[in-house]
Length: 600
Image (cartoon, rainbow, N blue to C red):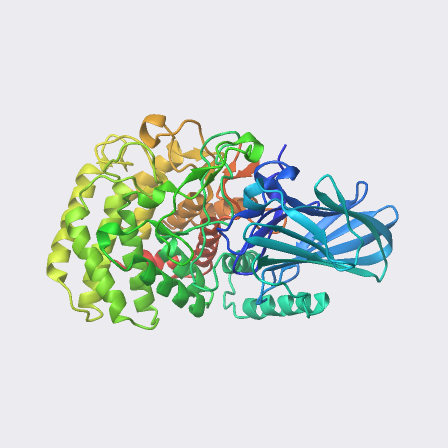
């Protein structure tokens, strides 16, 4: 049985990330980038697919926490003979990616076991391993080299590096796993491991100290912001949706996707979360990444991109991995990159509109890109598409997609009329109003008293909760009130929100999925706009209760099993958490601000 997602913590250096379990096993690591091939892939299979475990012998009592304001994990083991702590981190600003583990004795004596199984290319390649004298070992295969530097004696057993060692009160053992391209001659790190650890602690705390948020649930909001920072690829400013692939939306199911890419859809939400906490530099770099990524011919726009703006994200299945709890197939790449999703035009236009209003450095080049997008949208808005949830069934006229086309045109009109950019504001305003009328006529079901997932349909969709949040209609409009009521009636499961009721003929896939956490935060945001503050606070509190012991959330939650599901940790969930906290903490939060943005 796979380790529950709740048992994992995140380590990161703003280039890549690792997941370490409560019992000290690093089961997922891709180097040197988030989207590189994994050298530890036990998360999607078994220990033989690669992991690095350091754990106390026997059955220790385990407690763990992140050091305040950092992504440095402290795990404490207590046994009958003593106590020790393990400090885990990925070293920031290092010449080569470095995973550092420092074991410190607290009291008595504790015996620990080390097991290192390096398997490059997602668990498929057994490397050649050799000793480095008294300094550790080297593992090499193809383009990759990993060196483990330590003074603890290591030995090989059945293609595995193992060790047993003791730590006494006041003693310290360090382990540094360093990645190099195999054609580069490695050099032993000159920096003392403890200094590398302290430097990493200082770096994270310096970043955390810039946080200006002082509202509700400050510590959890800061933890979510630190998680988001860890998911930003430092060289480009792009944020990955999650550091993992193929963690299932239903245990044992086939809804398993690679999320190690940057989605345009996250743009506005991300900017609000960063700007609300005072992180203008990160917001600016995300805006710059966005403009670079979408530059080009608008009809070739992707809905997601690679970390540096790569456009071709070919999807493959890895048949040698059994998947998390047997959830096959394991996929890398994501074929949805080539889908038509009209809503992303609205998200990009809204994000750049927010950046303009917030006074981020203006860019004429950015406006030229936006104008081309609007000109394309004028001829494409009425096409059916795959929609926000990237269905793999037939294209449809999704109501949310049309609403976001309206958003794109609305923000374009405001760019001309309020900010003085040159553009066809009158023509765009006419089309904006025509789309609004069509959505109200074809996307609303009078029998349900609610907007529906697609034109002339009867299915509900949680994306409809965005209609008031983007200013399409005020929250007080009876049609929005009816839509919220219909979501409560038809999409709530154990008090949380499903995206929609999955049907193979609609989304092209068998099976079910968990409740979608971002959508549940959107419901709380709607409650706030409706003045139902007590209900918003209760739902927000219940969502916070789903975070694990170190404050992390996955994409979804399975109420029947009480398990987090989907890729982990999920940026969208943490972004929504930050924004809802801001909405509850003050007037003029992201929901109020965005819903009041409309120029129509």
